[in-house]
Length: 473
Image 1 (cartoon, rainbow, N blue to C red):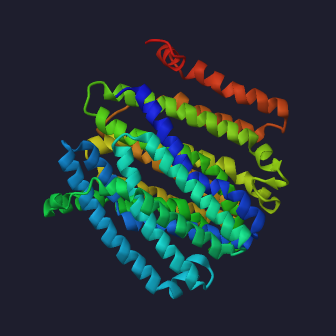
Image 2: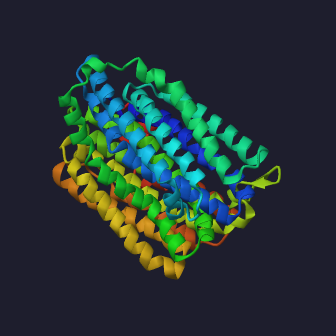
Image 3: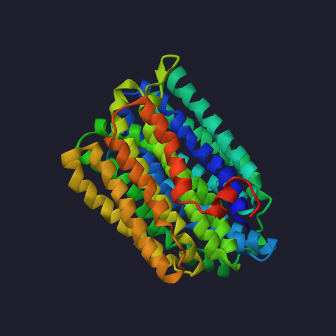
């Protein structure tokens, strides 16, 4: 499997992943132009809780399914692992959602800062459906069907957008309409995609040995996922506790645009994980991993620098009198470059995973994530009282850097892959320079073209240029 194939698959899966998360960005103009900062803060906490809870719902079964389904020797064996995971997920998702529903009255004030049991009931349903329909997308990735994957996610985007517009704008249902729209969309997606799973289910292949293997492999990812969500969500809850719900709403609006960096990383990772699991068994894998690392850091660096340069122009752009972010949320843009920087470091973290997987060092994954989560909490507590939302953003960025450095040191010890540190540092240097430059349209144009030129001159070698410009190596 070549670098070019990795690039094509990562691009396609990246489009699919961006589709799946794009709905949150497309809804941003709706939410920030309709809701107050307080109301949007509640919506943000609801989405934060859903993301956090899904870690427990999946307890590593998504990573488990990818590993065993991809590396199985035949169709019968892969279907056996799939069936085992489906049964486990269905039983536990039903149990977890039942508990959320039963305790909905007491959960609400803790996670949403309001006493709204109906909101929690809707969230319980969303969690159940989201957990199960995600399995179909994992199967599509494992079988190398990127365009079907894209189509499924695009359908989810259209459905969620339409239902949110109907309930929030047409029906005037407010926050409850947001959750109701998401519940119907998730339930519909499970119904539509379930045939993908059904055709591959084989209950005869379910046996105790498989249960033991998938649980043993998957459970270490549960604490890792828990710490990951602390990295992603602790800032929201600490801001709410140390400031107010309005600050959470303001921060979340800026964070959403900064999360374009996360979409880029996760889209790449959807092609990266099956790539290194297959390629790692072959000769010369380390060289290809090093080249992939160089290219991805360059691409994400270009993206980060360009978005930082033009973000203010982007959010002030109005179409039909409506801006990407409502005017009351415009001051949140100062955190966007910092969030982008954090996800750039997270990209470097993801690039270090081959050695951890291929050398069966996955027990270290929770350690890496714990280091990041702990750093994030400490930094948030230290910086929020003085700097508010800006402090929370810097806490997230620095925590990602610390986590990336820790996994790099471990990966280097077990499976050394060369890293071009000039390529790693170049986007960071440009970002630092942008903060000090005066506001100038001409300067923006210059930097937009200067960074790619600098990368080609200082980072790329002759083979890279041949590959990138389509010449035979």
